[in-house]
Length: 294
Image 1 (cartoon, one colour):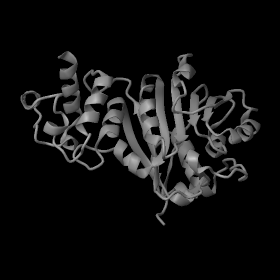
Image 2 (cartoon, one colour):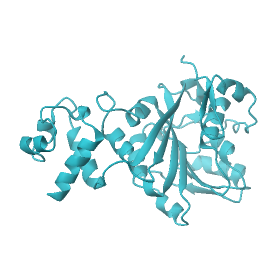
Image 3 (cartoon, one colour):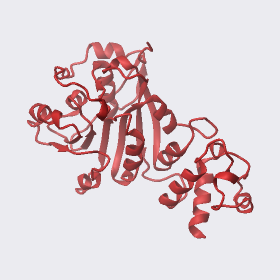
Image 4 (spheres, helix red, strand yellow):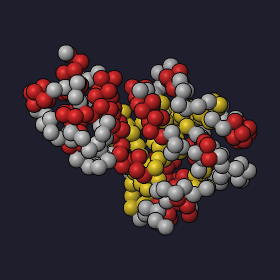
């Protein structure tokens, strides 16, 4: 089995090699609630149970007094217990109603705790940010809904301070990908248009119950306060990128047929015979802006 990464996060969220496991052994984080719930496959439930990994995530987030955290899919509350305090506001969104009673029993003593029995794919996150305090979103996201949920959360980026997620390693690789790599595509382009993306550390299957069949990883998404990219119609960009990557093996000439012709692509400095995965984010922005203006 793959080993856990050696290292730990400081209070500032910086990674220090060779100390995570030692720090985990000395951790005073609350222990996970005794296992009384059978994980449900239809909800994609794999409950995080490794104290060292929980400590690493909590230290990376490092909640401060007065902040507003939102946890998606708290499950049995292992990470919730590491984050919550009387000085922060913590909203949790949990779909499985069988977990609600345990979560309320464990955390209702905290004045800033509120549980929403809801589906994160349709939940109105904007309603939580109406007091003007930016949201800090965290979650062990079910792998079966992680991509559509990430796209939905990107729509709320202007009201978010940062996001920390446990995801399938392959999804994190796509989020953090660079042009020219096999992972570069729609998810990475849209995430990097909105956010700085940091692949923090990997998490092996044995950190969960039941163990998933894939490797996992922690990623941090930090929405830009001042974007490094030219202004762009986000809906137009998303539509263009979806078309460009509709069939990865085909060229832009084929995938963008009826959208942009060869002459226009050439005028924009793009080779019609290349594949979408070879283009920079700026190339997609320029194409989207051309379409928006014409």
